Each structure stands twice: as C-alpha cells, then as structure tokens.
Length: 107
Image 1 (cartoon, one colour):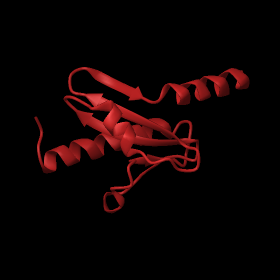
Image 2: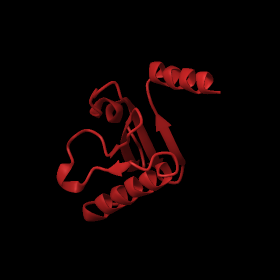
Image 3: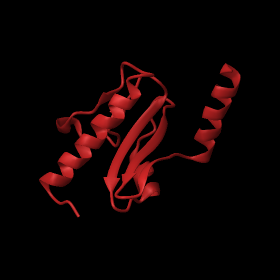
C-alpha cells in the first residue's frame, strides 16, 4: 500500500493519464491543480462531464461519486484504477441512459 507523498504522486499521475486519454476527444480537458483540490472533482471538460479520479486497492465508488458536486447539469463520473484489477468508470444509471440517448441520436 502506498502512503503519504507516494499516494499523492500515484493519484496525480492517474489524473494526468485520464486527461491525456481525453485530449483526443476534448482538447479543453484539464486537471484541477493541487491548490484547487477540494472541489470534489479532479478533471473538468468542455463536454458535459466532471470526473473524479481514484487510484487505490479498494474504491468506495458510491462515496467517490457523492463527492462530485452537481454543477451546470454536468454528469459526474468516477474513473478508478484498482490496483492489480484494472481501470473502471462508475456513474449513475440515469446519467448512463442520457449518454446512451446522445450516442443513439448522434448515429
């Protein structure tokens, strides 16, 4: 288990990876800087999403999602990297249905 400064570095590296992954679809994706932490989300986009990042052995998905505030009808998403188990995304079912409708209408 990583603790202290190592845990912060691990988390910040995970946030940077997510921003880099998003850059292909949204150039404005940006990481919320350390001195701005505490907003309840780690990545902001010009799209309709606020993203909270977690990189841990065990993630409390519901608690992490509840940290993300309701802002301008943006969809809160938790993106997590679970140690030795992979990368996942977690969001409310109603928000996933909104995304499905947008994709279906756009096709």
